[in-house]
Length: 472
Ligand code: BGP
Image: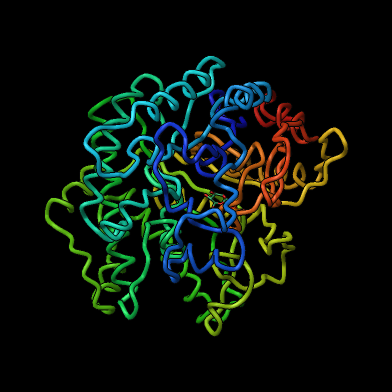
């Protein structure tokens, strides 16, 4: 009983949130480089505000992040010390194709990731690679309008062909798009969308969604052709919507909110648009421009596994579906659960519910690729943090996940906590919201030595992995 013997324990990061070196070795600029910290951030990542120009006036922590680009050996050695079986990371598109639409890739960028993968393999760590994690070349935004433009599918296909070919034998597990449903809530971050005044937003959003879905199916096809060993997955920002009350209208609203997210995975896992989505497009006068070839590609190339992030459940009522806390996905406060400093509900049983719901819906192997607690850590003089709150959160969630496996029979490939080393937050752009087992000396203004030090949770997670999740 318990987790399978080859269960993939590890941690997850994203290129733009830890690499830094934004202008090194030919890397081009990306949307994430132009998402500032502070008041403007939300307007920028949601595409409501015109893009900023890149300048030194605005501070962007992602510019330097935690300098993984130059310190990856030290960081991977620490992951190995914790016993990681896998390391989830992403490729910055602009390191491989600085503008996004070139014919030939940038060798320096390709080399960097090759070195990282080899470093992982040295310790027997299986890389799990997200092809795009909220990053998108600025040039493709300026010239093509982001993912709303079908031409971008071809550029993405080229990127996939290049990396699948180059990293054959080094990487087997791939994720096509990080949290693909976040595109609806942060269109600039998820799809390089900047809205024009007065345009039909749903038309733009669902066209971009369609283009990403088709691109994702192409990636699955190309990946399997280049190496039949490849396992290609989709990725959902998961977390069930609870109705605030048992009032039928609230229950219905919660179902609709869940569908808004499952919509993406319904297409990626089943290979076709669900009936409710087609009806929605009709009602809203949305034409996503689907072709016969698109339909065929989608049908023939469903994903091999379904991966997802889980931080919290959400809560909604029919009257007020836009109220409350919860950051990007607006939700109501659930009176039965406590929340973090950022208003995210603490709900381990909701994790078990969510895992079961996804498994019931798709019947494919699952992979939990993000989970964790964002908190303000206070280190002592040696950089040690007594983060019992983090240990508590993870312990409760791993227990719930174990129940989903042991008691409910869910097929689960692995578990990677978010941000095993402190990094820049995607939601706020700040360093102060930390998730790591490893503390990094860097503050919101970019000050600090970048020194790495172990938190209390470091040894705890090491023990969890060594016991395959038995010793919590
Ligand atoms: C997910 C993203 C990650 C990550 C995480 C935590 O949405 O895939 O990139 O950052 O959430 O969110 P935040 O950084 O806002 O705390």
